[in-house]
Length: 275
Ligand SMILES: NC(=O)c1ccc[n+]([C@@H]2O[C@H](COP(=O)([O-])OP(=O)(O)OC[C@H]3O[C@@H](n4cnc5c(N)ncnc54)[C@H](OP(=O)(O)O)[C@@H]3O)[C@@H](O)[C@H]2O)c1
Image (cartoon, rainbow, N blue to C red; front, side):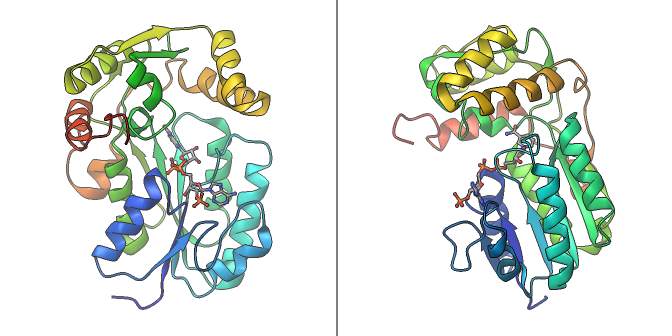
């Protein structure tokens, strides 16, 4: 077991918190990458990066808010340079499946000279339980510009499992893992699985990209609306209607099915109003 800490950037987020917890349970020393950590890490304050990366063996990189935001690729490139200067040996980048900007960032990490693994994820199942779709699920109506496209929703626990393997075992070096669930579901089918697990009706409402943009503008302003509408136009055009084998290749087991995720999340109280 190595003594050097592993940095988890985004350690309070959906993927990072699971990764940090699992690494600690396995006995690894974890450095939390958060604006509120003992050694703070802030994407908007590059002067925080060197201290956060100092002395770490490997680092998990989940970018906030999204690799499609303007300036993200320059920021990732700058981070790789600070990581190399700090003596970090390996970077594990969380990327998005079918997203042009995310794949530009993958290429930057591949070319940076450090060991790397790329974890290219499909839609998180936990978007419905921990992310921005939780409130709509509670209200019984999930409106998205997904028409009748299918998506292989991936459980964030599986993403975390792959990232932990990549951070701790050099056999994963140089690998690109496309992590998806084991099954394609339409958003209608996803809503039906959520309904069954929660015991209340949840409907999927197909909307236009313009309607999505307008609702995102209300929630987060025009930049957020522009970027996420652009991402949705890419990933919901049918390009991701296939299964990846990243969980199987990295962990030697099948990924968790969306219906199992729904049952477990409901049992843990994910959709009780106060969660
Ligand atoms: N959702 C999906 O379906 C999906 C699919 C594929 C890829 N992705 C990618 O997943 C990534 C997000 O990962 P996630 O869902 O695990 O995270 P998340 O749940 O969105 O959590 C956000 C994390 O970002 C941190 N953060 C926010 N502002 C920050 C800043 N200025 N500097 C440093 N850290 C900051 C927060 O930490 P503190 O507040 O503690 O600082 C928190 O740990 C994005 O890059 C997205 O593109 C998402």
